[in-house]
Length: 280
Ligand SMILES: [Zn+2]
Image (cartoon, rainbow, N blue to C red; front, side):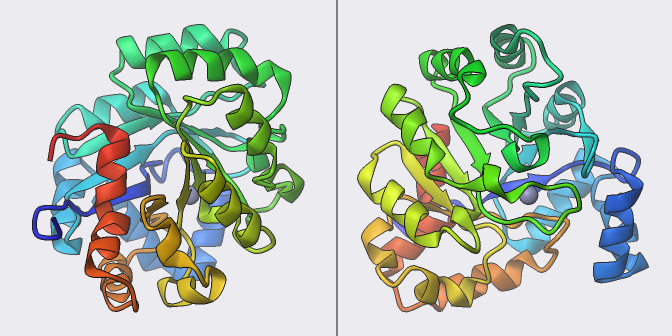
């Protein structure tokens, strides 16, 4: 299996420098210097440039995220992200639907899937200030379940100004998966910070809930999740580019973890391929 398993980055922001808020650009500059902005502009200058970067990092597929977070990070519209990804099947577009900005969530999801070719949804409760088990989201979940569209949800902490951490508690997903047992749910950041145990438990308990390890230092994974191997079928790799740019290094660190080779292949792409329905 390991030989043919693709490497999939499940968490790649394709928000351009023009689309980010000034606050976010300053944060990125403060964190990684002016060259981080040059890098951002270069990689997103065209789909081809992004594919070259993925090649350089040893990544076969990337999930490209739209966002509608005008108060925090910025807005990369669903239509623009879908258009960008049209260049290659290696770029997999995920839409965002902000429940405070879109009146008819179900129609927007249908449009994203049928007109734009969107393959999943990413929800940002900590940046958009809602609980994931809020009733207003339920029609969206029902439709996503019917269409077989996976939903990735930001869980855990965030250092961005204006984020409200209480909305990142993965426990609220227990309601969602109980009410929509066929809906595929991916916990981005696996409850980072306060809720690692809760995230691990939920992924172990519910067949349709996955843990995504974006933003966690890979060498710390066995510390955060002492029984990591037990959830090997449920763990998904992602980078959080542009916050992390040396993705290759994180992949290499995962390859050195004291886990079965087969488990590492699943984490680095096997699980994501199954979830996305990629024919590999
Ligand atoms: Zn992210």
